Length: 163
Image (cartoon, rainbow, N blue to C red; front, side):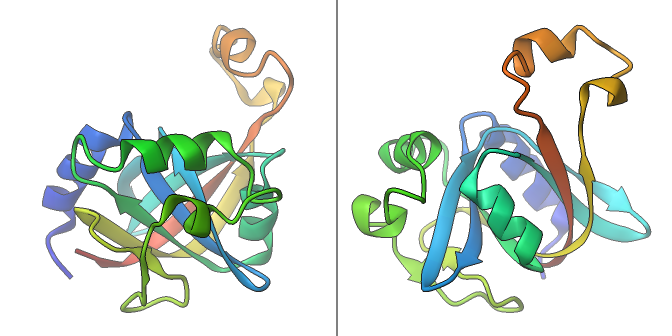
């Protein structure tokens, strides 16, 4: 496993432009674009926290699963794929087939990674926390992020492999 702090800097620099959250589904794999998250230490473990809205198919898959991967493309690459995976539902599309993304076996988890990404985090879910309006101390976040009431669950994954 490479130095997580160096990889975290690269990942955070790209995250706002998008990264791939990969999880398993019956009969295949689902990919969703994420544009936020956090990396750090929690419970003496390297952790990545990814927010997933309740309404997303990925949310159901993450609730059922125990592992996920986050694959961060090199800056300026895979923009069409990120856009597709961020605007189309896995309920209606096979995103891997539609985008031509190539999956590879992960090193430590049973969820694949996306080939040609610059940074990869393989994760095991440690905890999750559902957000709701009453959890926000700064209430100004709610109207512009959750106007329709579609809150996130924060999934905290131990980074078991990073490269």
